[in-house]
Length: 332
Image 1 (cartoon, helix red, strand yellow):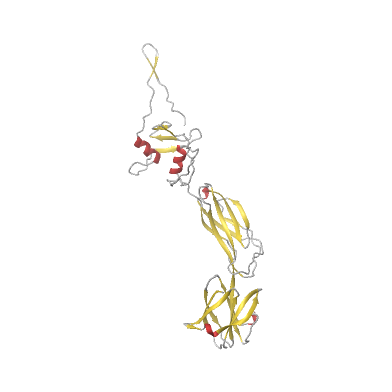
Image 2: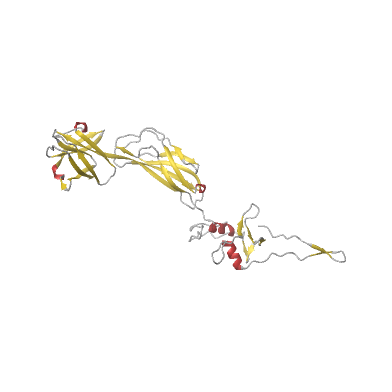
């Protein structure tokens, strides 16, 4: 900030010589006024309407109060002096975070960081459009271009958006998107597939912060592969294929832990069968409050369903009527 320059005024003395008036001297603020000016509030916490910090390209910061320009120093402190201590800060003060290194910054630089906190970008919404999030084991994703929906808070604080994926496959879908992007037509290659229950691809949206003192904002969505439980009736004591069952049904087990599901088996005579993925086991079967688990036996060996290995459980007796079960499967 440059030195204060006051306009010199003159008067004409009787002997016709120009005599300068005494130069105009800017009033010196009190310590209390300076403290109030720098934080913009008085002791009662009231905002000072006539206090401001004005930045221009010529002087780093000029401090103005009541229309009077003050000097470059306050009580002997040079406002343009730079910080030389390389030790990181150990406390957060206002917008100045703990752990910052202030070397080379001026007093005003530091005050600006304290008084004007950086508000980082945030992700309030991220969805994968029509992309199927839950898939059957052995089922491959087909090539598609779903529309990802994106919503970024404080987008002006981000330098760009990146979308990546990891897990059973990894790669980059797009990088350097504008932070104001609200939708993106993604390109998903074909062939992602798994035979492991719960296996996944994690799609990650990253908003890169313009202030590297803050962590990038991220949001993830998972595409998973799950096993199923198949059930139905058959008069045969041994069944090797799921399609041999009559009145068939099935449900997806969207968990790698214990799962309980209500199952209704239609009327008609036959043994009741349950096909359970080889990584799981039939933990219990209840008919109402009655434990019917011991009424089922595991068939020796496994059978293949869409190329995936399944265990087969069968009731010990032929059942003639419709039955409602609560079936619990767990990890083998």
